[in-house]
Length: 157
Length: 169
Image (cartoon, rainbow over all chains, first blue to last red):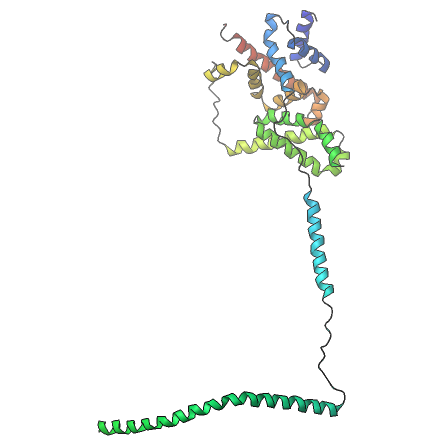
């Protein structure tokens, strides 16, 4: 491109009146090899602009994908299932069998049988208590201690 | 809208969001955070996506607003020392060293511009949006875009000239 043309474009450029395509021409011209010395100083400017337009972030910038949502709903569903499970498996408890007899005669007999069994067991248990009598006889012997008491009383007098 | 469709849609302008955020916030990490935040907001409002005329422009506006909020929060959080009546005319040693990398130098000049000019140059000269689109993104009219663009470019030229002449004059 002609030098005078470039100079004209530059003038327009600094007035902010160039179009985008004219600015592109300037960029192409100044990134090229042959730039006359009096325009040399603009080289940096246009080279800077071209260089700057290629800068990118060094870190990967991404939107955080919201996968956590899925887990959250699974958690909610599981807890609902557990609560529902607890609620439904707890079936109303049947009144337990108490062994009631319809006929009073049989009832009486059964009661007697049970009471008999209880007293029998009681007697069996009581047998072992005989040894307590030993304790009683041993206590009898301790009566002699009273004699000792009497004599000490006398001595005090 | 499905996730895949959303990703293909946003992949088209994701980097542009990042570059705009980086232009305003300078820090790489903060710009990445900003981009992530904007995409997340878009994703959350995906139901309303069809209502937007231009999703890309809308996302750019969101990015701009987000960065402005960040910058404002930073300003109130820090004490700033402003030398309004004193300016060192000579480039500092650090600047001279940095100037060796001349493209960095352009970046430095650009980042020294007021936020709006910086943003407009980013959108126009780097991302190649036309003025009407930029006006829509920033919520200002086209004339204001053109004026700010011209001012920003002239300022950069001025600074570049200074640098160019340094050591010569």
